[in-house]
Image 1 (cartoon, rainbow, N blue to C red):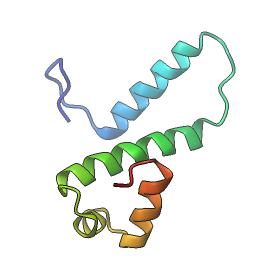
Image 2 (image 1 turned 90 degrees about the vertical axis):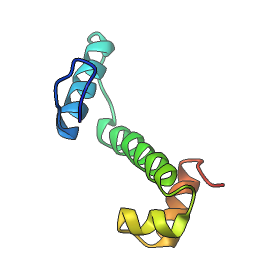
Image 3 (image 1 turned 120 degrees about the vertical axis):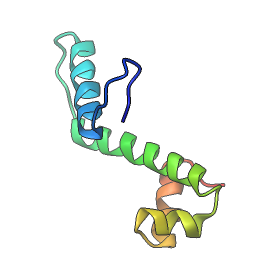
Amino acid sequence: MKLSGGKNQSLRDCVRAALEQYFTDLKGHEAENVYPMVIHEVEKAILETVMAQAQGNQTHAAEMLGINRSTLRKKLKLHGLEP
């Protein structure tokens, strides 16, 4: 993944940097429920991106994700992304 500075960064590094910024932004306040928050946000980004790549075709998107279509539909509904 290439960032604006021209340097390549892995997805893991991008998530790590985002989490470090999140903790910095808390300014000493206690973090809660970090894991479910991150999973929810990352899953939504995955769904949005894959659905765009699949041009809205749920069958193709499910194949790309390696999940079945009914699971995809449930996840889209959960994230408010249903058509």
